Image 1 (cartoon, rainbow, N blue to C red):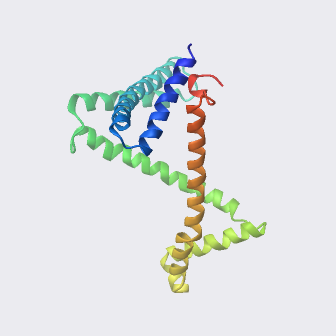
Image 2 (image 1 turned 90 degrees about the horizontal axis):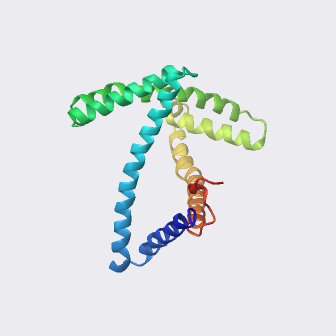
Length: 206
């Protein structure tokens, strides 16, 4: 009974959502809308539980002085500070909460993405070695795209920008859409497995 009830709920909820997309009748769309509102409420509670779980695990690591406990302490301090300021003073534009977000969080986020650029450059260096015909093709294409994105490329040859746009809009877009179609098919198959009860990892089992 412990596992059967969630599976039955998932089946009827999933089928209701699927049917509501194909049959826009109030008999179906009205309960589907109610279920969506329930999902928003459940998501809000899930966020609260997630924050509480992160705080509990971080405080446990700080108390036991485990590895990198200083970062956990900074996380708990920042979490408590932002939550207190947001609840006490609000999150209106131009307030303290907004100032901390724009002047601390956004610069730190930009710093993280800047560091990622070095890892991307390292990965590109390893991937662009012309050890095979495919790698050579990738190297030449990447070089054309990079030259078409900088002013010096246009100085070398005026056709680089146009060729770069064609590469981005035609072969690159085709590959991107293929990946998106594959991801969509994977999401559909996973959803069907969950609706039919074949996938039960959300119950906590294997």
